[in-house]
Length: 314
Image (cartoon, rainbow, N blue to C red; front, side, top):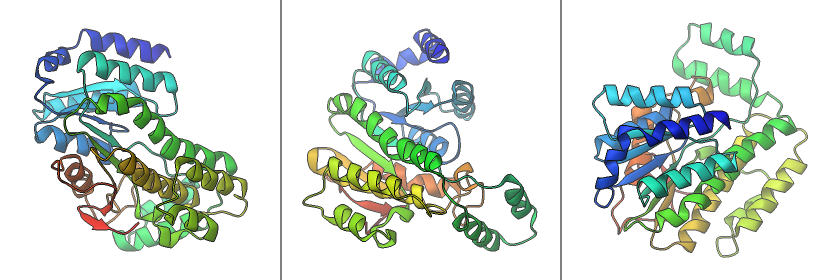
């Protein structure tokens, strides 16, 4: 809490307040989990497209360093605000900051998330040291992940951060997004959450029932998953959290028809999320999809799942 208060104090004297005068005409975006990897590159590409960006991260020091890095490359309209998607007070602080300093929000990119697995560090080091192609190393990494058991605490933390964290941030910022003439919500998801890969028949039926899909039904699926976790391995928690995000995207799109709300898989990119074994896409390629969705025109699609820049199936 002290770091949050300290950070908020820093913002009140920041030069970023100059952007307030432009808020009526210039688009404003919030990107969560944005101090590194795809999140940071999303900020870079949005700012390059003339969007004012609020880069958020849980770690204040790393977030400020990320903003300074972007400013060093000539992107001045980027500011930092601390955000922990699991902390309601942190989320409320961000919402108050946006409302007070900018008066509206045009784009929300929900990128923050964790992988829901705990790998043996020695095994990862062995894989990293192997003199193999990236493709072979990724295959060996995937095999290692598949064989790794998931504890209840790790699975619950993954679901809380990836799904409920995204919901908490979205719900807090919805009133400010509604003040925009062209609101956009982009949920960074994964092809691992596709319905075809959900092994639980009941869960698949619930999530695929578009007409009967509700947030309460998504909760039911996640609660059952966590209750029946014994024996689960690999990406199971991450997979279910992203399937829930995909379902939530459809629910939101139906509830807010004037918004453009979509979810997107950036592809396999080398980031901390996959212990830097991702391949074959660059960070720039991974960020390009979410940015395209964030900049959709008013007649653009809504309620869809994209793989990078192309529409895909749920």
